[in-house]
Image 1: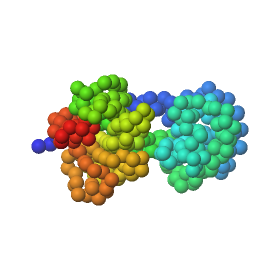
Image 2 (image 1 turned 90 degrees about the horizontal axis):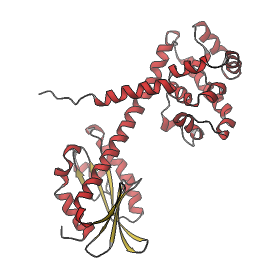
Image 3 (image 1 turned 45 degrees about the horizontal axis):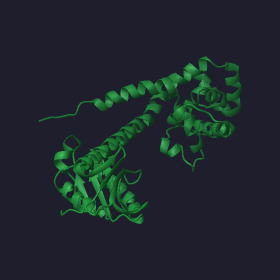
Image 4 (image 1 turned 90 degrees about the vertical axis):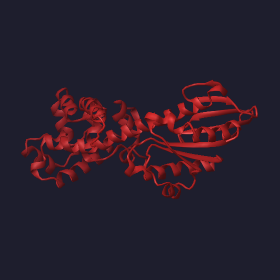
Length: 321
């Protein structure tokens, strides 16, 4: 029997692509150029771009700004920094770092803003990007140097970025699901709660906080005295359903749990969304994990309502397991 999920992810990508085209792909570049002074553009291109590359592009009917970023264009449309990044094949993670020195410019792509400090360093950025654009041009054949082919190059970089964003979103949903399961388990003991924190009182009369955290995903802490806590449980949630990548994600959980151990957490749990998992191998990849739990998002309550519930009762509420 053949079964496939609906192409919901691809539909979402289609709408994302439409929005991105309007903001920072070649369509957005051409819209921006129409509103600018061509003489100023040409003057800056001759200042920043390789003369031989400009001649080669001109012989093929292409303008230089299609490959060479200049301050004049980026000042008027800061988001276009994303176009040149994608064209040159850099992921956001590799591009916007302290190692490259480009991390300071990330808000240009993400928010379309150019600060005074960014503007002061914009010339240096354009010089370096133009050097790399020259390398790109030198590495391409003439038949590749056309608007459509260059647009396809940007999409090759954009695809993994969109999928990575979707994975992050899927992971966030999974964390929220686990948080809701915990809330359902301890519901009768809750004294206060919000979207990010649950406060209960355990059998010893002490306050226990169950909270979202940046790393690990969910933490459970018991208050020993005012503003002094015992770090009890750190929970890492890996919500992706890709079986082939599950052991990489367990490795990521291990890094988080090592930090949790250093912070004094006595229990480290890893929750995964893949039912076919080699637990022996998983324990080797994350020796810091005390317990592994497997769940499926659509029936998470049924899967976790037994063993997970009993263990949580024992550790958090002080009840018998």
